[in-house]
Length: 226
Image 1 (tube, rainbow, N blue to C red):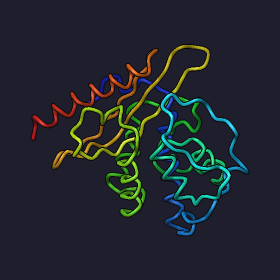
Image 2 (image 1 turned 60 degrees about the vertical axis):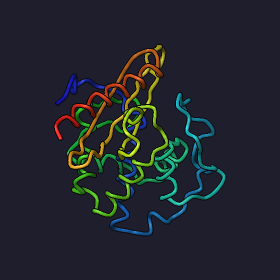
Image 3 (image 1 turned 30 degrees about the vertical axis):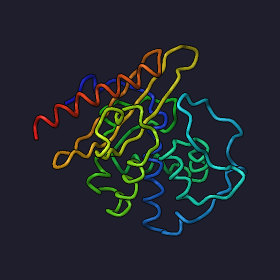
Image 4 (image 1 turned 180 degrees about the vertical axis):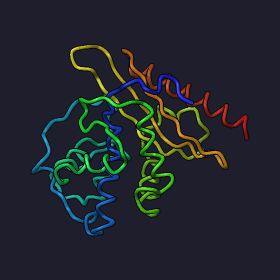
């Protein structure tokens, strides 16, 4: 079911998922890509946009990192330095090609919009291993299940329930409007489901709490159907 699922939001850090998918897809043609090294200090900016929910750890931009290490930092910690290093090292039009492969016309920058319902595509193709190989799909879903952010859809769910998810945040320039999103697969035994919650408002903490409460509501309804 969907409520206002055609509403448009800035994807922000949610786009780190298709970015990771791009590199995993490339590695299926050239396995050495994931072990190749990048020196972020030579390409990333010294400062990036301020994150309300700051990563618990970030890469050392003055050291070399493998592509796999950068993907891990980008997904698990939402590290923007790792993400920028990946973006600047990918081939031109790479993300656009990934979106085209999935028959999606989604944003390629944080300044574009996307519909709530469209973001589900990434998690569906990972769950079904219909774009990446089974191994790479499982590898990325495992990273998403190990994300260190737990204030959104996972907050009030049982700790033994695995959730492969990604959150994003966005402060709208020249306003006090903020956006918070958390989307992912909740692995309820025999009844896994996909939850996508996107919120706009003026208080980021209230947004994350609202996301957590809605997620708990969905979980309770699913459990009733078992």
